[in-house]
Image (cartoon, rainbow, N blue to C red; front, side, top):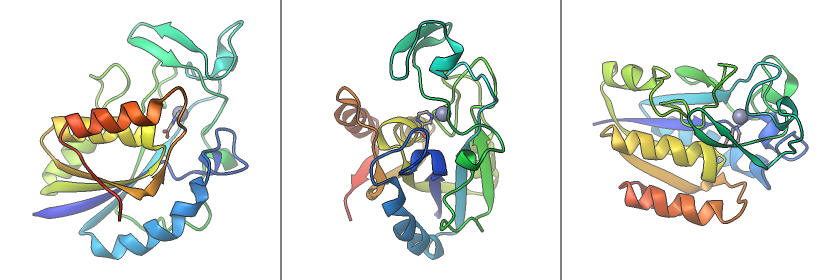
Length: 199
Ligand code: VGL
Ligand code: ZN
């Protein structure tokens, strides 16, 4: 069995001081760096939105961040502008090791958000990560990063649905946790067969 570490969105905008800061988001960086040598493959994801992306509240008249709107693919939380392509906020945390095998970018289509590293929020448009993992013979994944209740959650559920063995290492994740989203995400991951580990 070949195992990959999937490092989700450890970018400046999700760390303290960033546009969509996750509390203690930076504290996971040394833990993730220390995990990397234990894996056959290390893959990083990068939230990568164009200016004016449809997930930004600023793109919708009368909306403020953390409100929702209805998109053709369902309900979408509206975020502060974040992870704009090429901006300092979209860069990886400066202390994160980025010498992994693959960096996969997501959320680059203007009209659709992408929390999951596998499918965009319409749940059908693939990012290509599944094909990469399968052609490399990787069948087991450990996921870490930001945020537990959004991009880690949706990536883990999709991976389990695709048949990968999935563990989320919670000590190396941090959550946004709005309106009970962390509890709901934990429940959804468990129900999908994702192992949630605390060590
Ligand atoms: C994320 C909200 C918007 C995440 C990305 O990485 O969890 N959350 N874009
Ligand atoms: Zn985003």
